[in-house]
Image 1: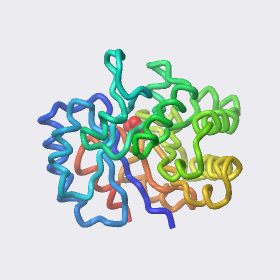
Image 2 (image 1 turned 90 degrees about the horizontal axis):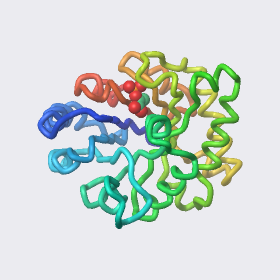
Image 3 (image 1 turned 90 degrees about the vertical axis):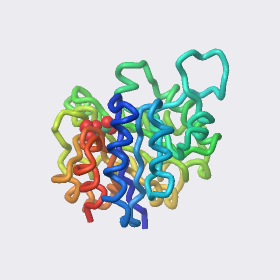
Image 4 (image 1 turned 60 degrees about the horizontal axis):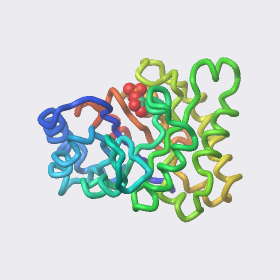
Length: 250
Ligand code: PEP
């Protein structure tokens, strides 16, 4: 039985005060939900204030990215060790916006994942095809490359601390969700890739989240699919009302 995960990616939104307001409204709405792992990923500058607010709650904290070095002359970067220090248990790596705007590649994603796992963080490993790749019928080829490249050199033991997020780029922030069937097809394929790279148990156990315009209205349909184990939520995680409705989908 795979425990569902609902993670909120706050992207480049929310001052400390706005983040504190959001989390304060969210806590009571989800506090009785023990069936779902709940994660929020604020901007780096709001991690500490959100951590203080969620201290006695069932909500976990994630960074939105990290660098692969622990420390050094790397201006502007944040290491896994510093995310842990700020109270994070999770980190998002390989988000399509980082791949698209900040030159992230399968190789840098792999280096970041290894560093984050070594430090003891759980990784939300993002993959997904663009619209052009889907239209060119390259979805499976792209997912194969991203999964194989991202997981290169990662052991079966380390895999236990990875959650995959399948996020078709054409569905992120566009209001266009993949149909339940499109998402299930991709998730089943990703699970089969993990089974092939590791073994059947690893494939059965890995949690695969869907991301791309998830809303209270479409979460139920997605969650009834056998290979969908939760969601990575952007826009709808910025309001306590919509994010809590997604968390409490059941
Ligand atoms: C995301 O940022 O990972 C995401 C899925 O965004 P949205 O829910 O807004 O499409």
